[in-house]
Image 1 (cartoon, rainbow, N blue to C red):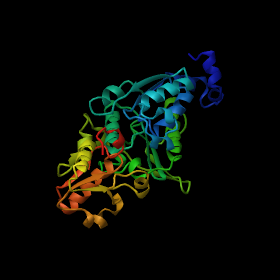
Image 2: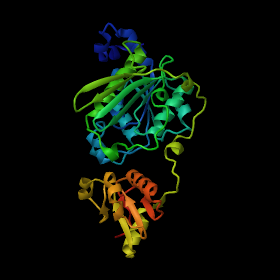
Image 3: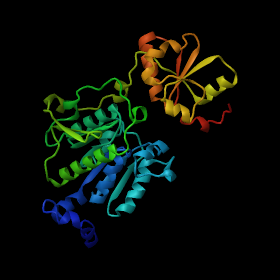
Image 4: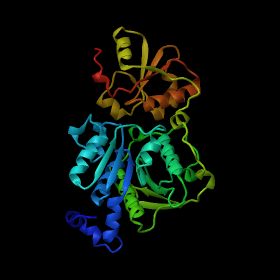
Amino acid sequence: MLSNQEIARYNRHIILPELGLEGQQKLKNAAVLVIGAGGLGCPVLQYLTAAGVGTIGIVDDDIVDESNLQRQILYNIEDIGKHKAEIAAKKLSLQNPFVCFNVYIERLNKQNALSFFERYDLIIDGSDNFPTRYLVNDACVILNKPLVFGSIFKFEGQVSVFNFENGPTYRCLFPDQPDDSPNCSEIGVVGVLPGIIGSLQANEAIKIITGIGEVLSGKLMIFDALTLHFQMLHFNANPQNKLITQLGDYIELCDAFPFKINEISIAELKSKINSGEDIQIVDVREPHEFEIFNINGELIPLDTLIENQHKISKTKQVIVHCQRGSRSIAAIKLLNKNNNTSNLYNLIGGIENWNECQTSI
């Protein structure tokens, strides 16, 4: 039962005829698992906490980075370097002491997904990569859990609800995993967009829990932040996508390469530079990133790589790097596809932690 203090806190909900005390009690009794405490996870977590969802689980193994602060509004400069899930739970507990938080500082994978999901009534996906999205979908199908989906790309956001009351799944809309896809660190995202999309995800969750309104099942809402234009795409369920009985190897499928990618650490690269070894360093970041900090590599942004591939040595050892390592892997994939070269080395982790490596240069 709701306490007098809770009734006072949730007054604006309770006076809504569609919600009332019964709806608020349903929120209190609900357990929701949020995958990711980043751009989408922040608004989802804040609004579900404020709404009075009784138990909220947070799955995220990432730490706060300065580049997150442009859109991940739960965090500030004092949180940099700390685990997002832990910081989020601590701050949200101050927002609403009546909510219980379960923190999982782990990366979601096929080993832990089912054990996590079975403890919750509803799953909300705030991840930013396709392997996780397919993993989340399949785990929800196996356990028959409704899934609230959201994604963001530059100025565009998408929201839908999958596996709700025998409705379509994520695979009914996107049957197959793509080979590769850039994330926010590679292509950017306008800061307010995850706030808009995350709020819509929280709204869908509240409707599902309380049984009010029309849920976005079988519909994909697409939002354009530049034009404020909304589109609604309708899609049907494919019964075959309900037959999943076990989880697959999602990372391997999405990251499979026809060749092995050579890698080099920051310490190894610094050693080569110090010894004067004749190597080529290729920086595939954007010009503005290069201006902020660079290691005297040759700037060839990823989207200009093919037209400038003649600048890349076929005889020297070539060290390809970006900020964190994902764009450089994409660059090596692209170059190998076109040239079948084997002298390319990916700088592990990019130059994000360059200054943390103690080897002098």
